[in-house]
Structures are given as C-alpha cells and as structure tokens.
Image (tube, rainbow, N blue to C red):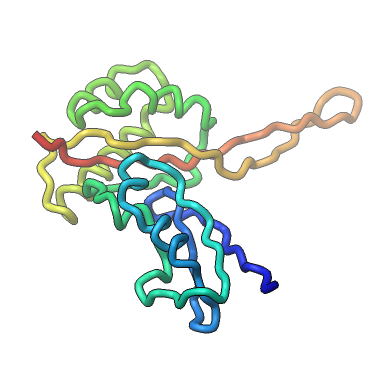
Length: 189
C-alpha cells in the first residue's frame, strides 16, 4: 500500500515544447515501463505528448532519466532569433503584418513589408533585419538562404493615461505595447 508519487509535465521555454521531470533523488523509484514509455522515440516522431511519470518503490531511477525533453529526440533546425520588447502598438495590428511574412523567404518578406501600408510594418522590419544579422554574424548563415521560420507578437504591458472631459469627468486612454519575436532559419535544399 505505498502511494505512488506523480511528477507533472512542465513546459520548456527554450524550444516551446512539453518536457517531463522525473525523479531527482535516489530514494524515489520509477516503474521501468513508465521510463521506457517516456523515452520511446516512436512517440517523439508522432508528436505525441510526453506521459506523466509515476514514481513508486519498484525499480531504481536510471541516471540518465533526470529530465526528458522532446528536443533531445527530434533535432530542430538551427534558428536565429530577434526580439523587440515594449514596442508601442497593438498586438492585433502587428499580428496582421506577421501573418503575411510567416514561412516566406527573407528577401521576399522584406519586399512585402516595405510596400505594405501599415505603420506596424516598421517594428517588424527592424526585428527581421536584426534576426537576419544574428543569423549571419552568430551562426554563419547566408542571408539569401534564410526564411521566416516562426514569428509572433505577444501583448506587453498597457500604459494607462487619462484625458480630461466635460463636467469634471476623466476618460481613460489605453496605450498598448507589444513584444515581437522573429525567428529565421536556413532552407534545406
């Protein structure tokens, strides 16, 4: 009648995929079938979620099973990333621009951004140029082979301001900010 201890899954910020934490101390034991299911490469290739690990006093914890991450089983292509934080503007308006360049080549994305009639294009161009420079200088990639592998806009903090109105009232004005992330990778041909 020993109660099993359940270690829940957690989210890996590095590659934005699920990871599973297993037992860290030698006093806790893990069922061998659970460890085998967690590390099975067939599950990684199918993209299934990592199951929860159930610990019990049956089998010893293998030394290599401290943290199992999906990135270990599937090699991700090397990506250069650029962030633009706290840029003034709405995340919805920036997402409308990012949806147009996602998956396109670097040169094509620059041309599209240059001629789009939206003010939100300016911070996106700035971020895309920075990501391409990071790819060239830090990873040795060629700019002509780059494409936009991932791009997204998250809402930042909203600044609150007040405007005086008639009869002593005050209207609240919201000034949103946005965090823009652009990742570029080399096309494999």
